[in-house]
Amino acid sequence: MTGFSFRDVFGAVPIHSFAVVGSRRLTVPLRIPSRNLRAIAIALGAALALLSVIDAATAQGYIGVGRRFALLIANVRYPDANAPLPSIGKDARLLAEELRRNDFDVDLRENLTREDTQLVLDGFYSKINAGSAALFYFGGLGIQVGRQSYLLPVNAQVWSETETRRDGINLDAVLTEMNRRGAKVKIGIVDAARANPYERRFRASSAGLAPVDAPEGTLVLFTAPPGKVLRDGTSDVSLFMGELLKELRTPNLTAEEVFAHTRMGVSRASNTEQVPWVASSLIEEFQFTKPATSGTLPSTAQAARIPESEAAPPRISRPRQTSPAPAPAQGPPVPAQAPPVPAQPPTVVAAIPPVPAVVPKQRGAEPIRDCEDCPEMVVLPAGSFEMGSASTPFDRPVRRVTIAKPFAMARYEITLDEWNRCVEAGACKYRSTDAGPGHKPITNVSWYDAKEYAAWLTAKTHQTYRLPTEAEWEYAAHGGANSAFAWGQQVGAGKANCRDCRSGTNPQIVEAGQFPPNGFGLFDMAGNAAEWVEDCWSDDYRGAPQDGSASLRGNCGQRVLRGGSFDSSAAYVKPSARFRYDADVRYYANGFRVVRAMP
Image (cartoon, rainbow, N blue to C red):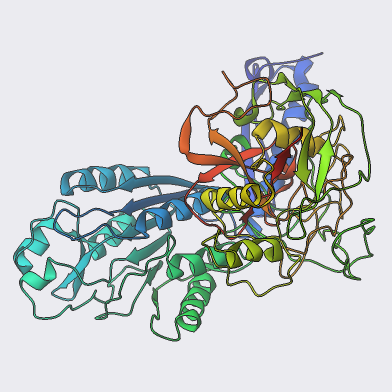
């Protein structure tokens, strides 16, 4: 018998069978024709195995709350305000990406009117079902009236407390409705405690927001305590959101711990000028991230979905120590301790078609340098290769690309020392606050920052420096290999600095050159810092150049990043993996390297 349908199997004599798996009793009504007893045994065996896995995951507490839903509203532009709110939009986008990586069904909306807000809320409520987790984020302006907080839509016409109640969204009412729809866990994140022109129309001073009156099973994080307002900063991403994202990526923290650590981190970083406020009526633990254990069951949504971006890089594993990895022949000093081996079982990496490349390998190529302050460069030969892998929607269709001329690429990611020389010369505006070793890659730079550095090198050396194109970068990252990774088909351990490549109590950027180079003599083309390239973002390769030049179609407000980071999963450190980020946003895991045209 090679196959069967359920109708074939359950067809004749009615009986009842049950099995106990963990705490579950499985009862199955069956009509059994004797010829199908073997098929029934196979079907029941599969059902029992599935329930065993479900029980294991439920025991870990990750799927115990059912599905996860999030609504994020970012109101940046109020017509009656003097200027847009500086960081709300980018804060919300970063939070959305992080929640998606943690299996939330996320709806992100910006600049909503009162009518649109109600429609979006109604849609959000309709998704919530019994046992689910529901998260509501609001960034914008808010006013306290009658010890309740009202969140303002962009078209609010507020001149009194009565009009605030009429036009505003009652935060307590939102949380109550989430509870009424059956949400087991209700989470609120509210960034609305700021002075605003509406409140000044009927009050002498700002009253801030009110303490939340929320139902059981609720956890709310405010950017400021009740009654207090904050001044907006000038950075692209707020201090509050930066600390929150850092804690969201830390494994094995409960939601209450994430919010408590965020409060303490913001307080320390602001010298107590800003102290977020947490209110909780949770009655059981809830975690944003998956528990860092080997038995975690991925959800169906997670298994089927390809993450949109690794820019707000993902969850982190905790490391243990291991034996040293081979040191590079040349380059920055190598610490005695090398990348640890992951504590969990090896990551299973989906196979991709071989990547035949017509290029010679040149291990340990002699680097060149145009000036004392310039990065070391390795000359790569001309060649052809199959670009993409068709393993995600973003890296297809696979197509043959020809690099017609040799070019030079930076041997390492651009380091802090190299960046600071550009700053000292007055050519690079961003001043890093990172006091780490000078051989550590510069990160938290935008695409435009990286372009400034390349322009400085060009002016200094009279050679043509620039960011690599996507095709050049992928060609270089393969190092002449035909495998999924430059070193083989599996990510393994100790080959790169990424979340699935090693484990550690404090995963972070490490000094350049601590892992073996690829076949072209290039270091850290996988992991460590994600690397900006020249190309505009498009969701696929349709219509992309085949001559190795940059693609300038698609969304040029977002640029492509390659190579993954120290905080990326194995899938994102493959040479073929690609993701995106806003070109004008600095992010702590994003860096770059440069290429130079050859005569």
